[in-house]
Image (cartoon, rainbow, N blue to C red; front, top):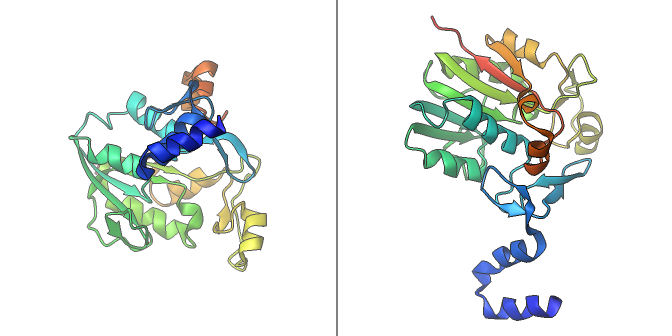
Length: 250
């Protein structure tokens, strides 16, 4: 098999080598990525602690992104309604999908990512009030020192009647969020918060923090609507609640 791989590498242009690796190492029919449509015999292990079948080898999405796409397609009008969308810290696959959707007026933003269309600090969004119908902010707030200010800014730019999906990693065994501004070393942050660039570990009071920022919050266990076979097929986590945050009509 290794001899065949080396021969094919010499025959096939270098720009296609990554696809060659996908074919030999991952391609199969056991798992399907709803983000890119790829089919695989296994996915990449990733995360800390390491999770098997966590990352799509084709589009690089994780379990939370696959759940997001399924939820948006099956439970919302995201791909049907005319929406002005703000996507914070965009993933390449998701930005590509949104830019190709004729119903979406899409803007992506990040503090530094070259992928983003705009660059700004989430605690000081340089955009007018009531601008967006929908905001997607996945696993960002745990990186922001003043997360309450960031939440209030997201609430400010959301239109009345609009909705946002604001997800963070949550320790379901912790009632209250743990944070300590005095913890600055990457080693201590990883030990206490789970990752070296996280500044807190959220607990079950995350919804209270969102409400304090102004949102009405509904927590949905969408995976209960999926079969065990679907959860396995799409390589989803066994449990992940979705936080649907809304701004009431004036």
